[in-house]
Length: 263
Ligand SMILES: C[S@@+](CC[C@H](N)C(=O)[O-])C[C@H]1O[C@@H](n2cnc3c(N)ncnc32)[C@H](O)[C@@H]1O
Image (cartoon, rainbow, N blue to C red; front, side):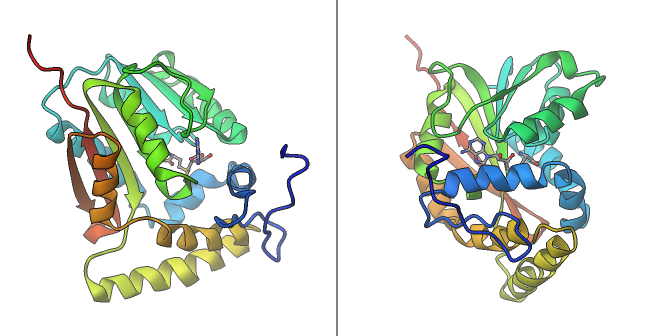
């Protein structure tokens, strides 16, 4: 079925897109949702995370460096780059690297390119359209693959992880940063009250009730930390790890592609 012929996906009462994972239109609706929020995405993210997201991405890159013994970093793919926050941080963190930042939502890429203009690292950044489920890169193209807050939006997580593994060179490494359930039951209750009630109400104020009702639903669709690590193993990562931040609200999942053995 082509996109024009596909039935309309779910919408919230304010008319904003509200993706439903069980519908065949899910991927298209995720793109509609990110198109809808592209202009407000960054500042809303800073507000909803109470500023913590400023720390999460740099800390995850630090975790990645400690995780991988092979530090050669010439080519990096940042997948689901959105407005390019992580891609720009990756480019300044690895000053010798070229960073390919890919996303399947054009409006986010437009915003990313605009925000990157005039930045010192802009010459080493390239933005382009791609879906995580079929990456348009040859096997072994990258030293590092990163993605932040993308996993819970994927219609087929195992397939996307296998694609990320495929495009990593032997000895390369993956960083997947994602919102996760805090381990402490008391803090977990607070976490759910915040994401289930406060964040959707903030979303409704800015005409985006659907996207910010979808957010807590999408968190529930993610596997547990243990099962996420199993999924990384099943995708072909030889060594895996998880590093929690902010009492477990976010986790950096790490995967090492097996190094080529000596002769
Ligand atoms: C929550 S935003 C995260 C953006 C950015 N990584 C950050 O740290 O702020 C998720 C992004 O993933 C993109 N995305 C979701 N599913 C995708 C897919 N299957 N292929 C490529 N991009 C995807 C969306 O378009 C959106 O820009």
